Image 1 (tube, rainbow, N blue to C red):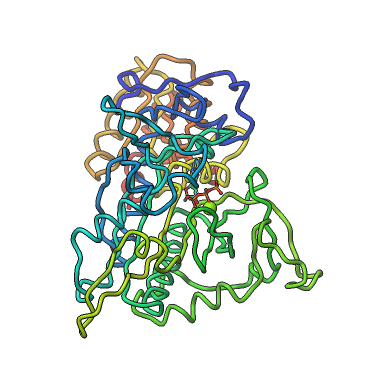
Image 2 (image 1 turned 60 degrees about the vertical axis):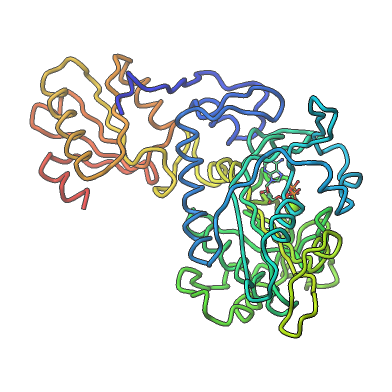
Length: 434
Ligand code: ATP
Ligand code: MG
């Protein structure tokens, strides 16, 4: 991609209302534009990151045996009346009337709709277990939308739902998601701590939140200092193992959010208190919705039984902010390679200079032939401003081509993650790519 032809509206000044670093950096680097309180447009650079995160989630959820689908954002109020949540949900639900005066709503979550899909299509225990998920926009009319995409009103969520024949297999499904979530956050370059949590309006008997430690997080969290020594290689864990054992290891050390914190459960000397960002939340709620909405399966003896369910959420758009909170410096974002909007940036410091143009173009073409996604700064901005913008948008590698080195067929290569710079020749680039 040639920067001169791209849509990357970089903002020089720090937006006044942005209180936390991820919000400031997302606005400045032209990733998002606020359209109303808690409602954002995702501009090209932001959307690239959002899609990369989504595809890592999809890949790992599919590995776990879940199936992706897509439900509408608009739901009928009648479904929510069946579960009894239409009146309970409160002001966070955006309620709408259509032209026939029928009550509809913009979905804040999808337990009712998925239960309806299940009961319409599944009749026998033989179709279980089943796990269905989607990545879809949600709307919650938050009382205080803030911190950019971290607490929006419209936000992208991965929501999944498991269906099982009894409590034990349903807990197995819950454990599978517990592990899958840890794998996802690990793949995104984040350390997420599972913490016992309240079930809130979703309800249920078992629930964990996945929290990323960060000073700017909204939740106060408490955990055992020994957590850092809990060396589990999550990547190596297979979904076929006895997952209860691994979940038990993760939950053996104290970790709780503010609402669940109980100082009597932990030795004072081991207790650490900090703040965190909730990036995922899983619930086991058994038959809460299947009973009220009649989602039953026929057992081998011909009797009918309500299915056991769990639901599993990840804040996909919130993750964009959470990753920035945990990976940035004064100058800007430092994208982990796997979610970076581009793999490599090429900065031509002297557009119009023959040797610079030739080298920059050859680098562009050869990186492209290796399948790399490249942002090539071919604009006529000043060198200082170009380098500052590249540091701001945080692409993991910068190839900097300037007239002094170009004379000898050399250029600089900078890792944005370590800020380490090396001078290399075109021949060495091949080694580097490998
Ligand atoms: P919170 O406690 O932050 O209000 P929640 O418990 O209401 O979240 P869930 O229903 O568990 O949220 O939703 C699943 C995930 O969706 C959360 O873990 C979070 O990452 C994300 N999420 C929830 N609300 C928002 C929001 N307003 N903006 C962005 N992401 C959100
Ligand atoms: Mg929650």
